Length: 453
Image (cartoon, rainbow, N blue to C red):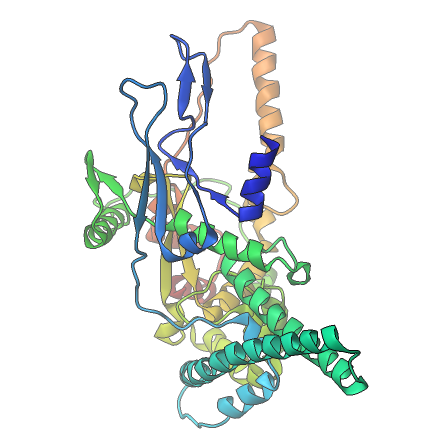
């Protein structure tokens, strides 16, 4: 068994997740013993090239379950612009950004100017990236060839000082290329708990491929039938969420609780204060640099690294939102990503919708969130333990346990009710939200910001 394990490790074989069950072999009349004895193992190249899935099939006469390996092709969708964080490590990158950023002049409102400059930058970055990617590939191969030649020379004789120095230079250049490759794969894998300096390029590569396989929806069960065609899957997803987010009843009872907590004028003044440049910068630099990309394709690492080059337009656009209460329509574009709650998810209820917003929207929402945090403890009752900084949901669980224990000891009959609202945030009625904010003392300016976002 040890030799077999060493063989798997030496050949760098990968074990695929098993869809449809946990075990492939059972023994005993009551199936007292079960194990996963059967499996397909693949090379990394297969995982990259094909959409691979290992499924378990029903047993008939054998005590082993048959396995099926599906090797379809990945569906190629339209490629959107995606900022690569390794670009930030290339020589003269900031100087290029500054040159491109200032190469065109636009007339209009600050948010329109920022949107135009970002679109121009996308075009320039695509052209530059294509050229540098080809150059990096040729450069990497050239370095390897030169190092191989130096190795052959060193087998025959001692290298000269110039040749030894050349080896050092080539080694440094190769390590820089490897570092850029590692940053690129780390961004794709989104293994944010590992540092880039850990040199885990292969790990990042495998993690990215695992995410791709895990998040791909290749089958849905709709009304008991399997839907596998990509076009049909898209239609079913669209129909499902249109129904989910459409309210069928337009009338709702008014809710006017007595003793509603309210914020005062001082709180409103703090909430609606001008967005200063330092406030905006603090929000930008507090964001994680390589989170999932929104429709604009830019990472927050770009905004942080190139802040001095682009800050004038960014600050002006966000301050314009403060004054006018709206921004360029493209800033509000959103990707909806469906994240499976479990492996092998096949029903739409098993997916969690996540909004991927653009960078400018992210900055504005973070500024508003940071301000709202400061008044939330005044508005939310002390019995509500979740979502408020400094409070722990475990406190509510402990209180509930104490209540149950007290009633159990007292022998007094009681009924315990647990209320669970399915998809509570998906069914939020916005008109009810605006009325609630007004009752809590929020001014029209703040509510206008909320409505537009």
